[in-house]
Image (cartoon, rainbow over all chains, first blue to last red; front, top):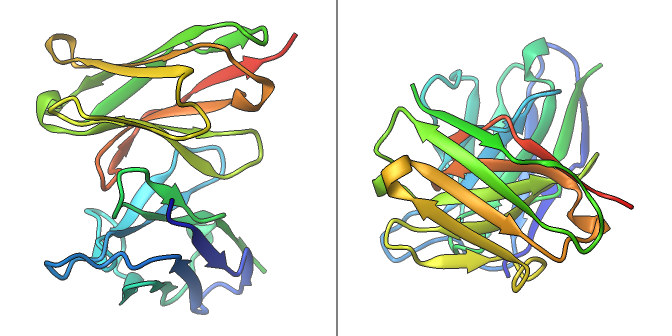
Amino acid sequence: DIVMTQSPLSLPVIPGEPASISCRSSQSLLDSNGHNFLDWYLQKPGQSPQLLIFLGSTRAPGVPARFSGSGSGTDFTLQISRVEAEDVGIYYCMQAFQTRYTFGQGTKLEIK
Amino acid sequence: EVQLVESGGGLVKPGGSLRLSCAASGFDFTTYTMNWVRQAPGKGLEWVSSVTPSRDIFYADSVKGRFTISRDNSKSSLYLHTSSLRAEDTAVYYCTRGPPLDSWGQGTLVTVSS
């Protein structure tokens, strides 16, 4: 199975400041068509996870523009340009390159 | 509006069985891969099983041979039959559509304890 490794695992951020989460996979998630099968999810406190970014860099409908995804192959990044209070929660990356999907450990974003 | 509603969770003794159900609405169920993802208390997300529109089936090693996923397209429903349950199967089980997993149910809690 593909192993997904996130860092940091804890991320305290001041509102209005940027934030960045790294996700690395044990093998490439890039297919022959140039698609990176890497998604980002946010689980807000007490809620089910929600899709933020798919195919490495495409925002899901309704996701604010302050969220962006980048990277290719085995190294990916989720960036929040200016963190808001409503962004608190646990962020997970997930590979969908193989049907035996695997998630990162999760990064807990909290407001300082 | 896409809706996924899980049911069937509860308290079960080690070695016992439960059948989880997921009622889907608001989309063409027949054209989507459907999945179960679980989350143990205070832990991260773990993919459990998937079934494609053509009924190709995949399981995590941790549940293979004990869990069975199925779908009933006539009822727009997804199922997970769990057996030989262990304490480590205790988790909230989410029904999801995808990938990408763009819709999630509210989850159903399975507690395995004597």
